[in-house]
Length: 194
Length: 194
Image 1: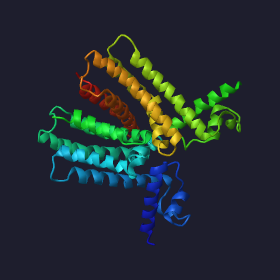
Image 2: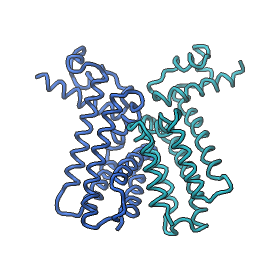
Image 3: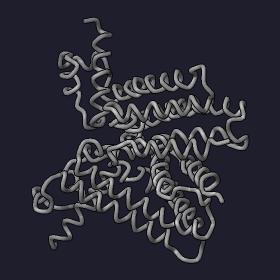
């Protein structure tokens, strides 16, 4: 198997395990066994477990930011409809299997944000990119007079990202997606109304 | 030392360690050493590490819900002022040392919510109590016409709790309390205005 394939296999399997059970709770051997990569070869691909963790943030982030970009930039509907469609899409994913474990970026922030400065710095960057995608959509909505002109777009975009993370967290306590329904209702019914 | 003292010492030290570094990442021996309780005596006080975790939720929850109750029920100011004062007080705590590690209930939900049904069930109950405290305050605010009559009090209270948890999560990525300032501004400036 080419080297890069092994690295990708380690990342993919680590992403699934860490998402489900946490970073500190997942051992390197466990990842290698799942990935079918020979024991002892880990340090050929990653300098340390921390190095793997930082690569995992990029892995999760590229999935999330490309989803945000493609959904928010989709043509054919108004900026607010695209934003609503985006969150409704995630709610439906969450109702299925995949998002039961919450947002992998939120999970890692909760677990590692204050324990490791390199993690914190990288996670901070992902949140900034998520908020920027939403801000662009809000900017368009303002230009087409879909939202109140007095809304501070930076604060609103950050509030939406943070409140969404909080709703995804609450989903893990409730075991259902009711917190996401409430999030969508409050954001689109109260904050983003004309 | 009386038995109950040892149990309390284990709980207090476990609470500090778990809050800082996570539940799965904290070992029983580490807790006992910090607590100065003889090794091997753990199972005299707790049936299992899970049993300790469930006791920790009660420990954290009693602190949080008593703070909510005393602050929200404080006399001498309007319901909305009390609510604002409550969140501003937490923001200031967060600016100091203690809340840098986020909300211990949010942390445990992120880490254990989908891994352990007994944790999930107990954490769910804590969120419900937190939301009820805020709902009572909103109910009073409505009675004195401080907020819009059309607001759904249940959804609004849940949204406030969840968005606050999300803001506390984001604090761990940012390393400052800006997410809490934005939370307060959006909740009190937009959602809870007359």
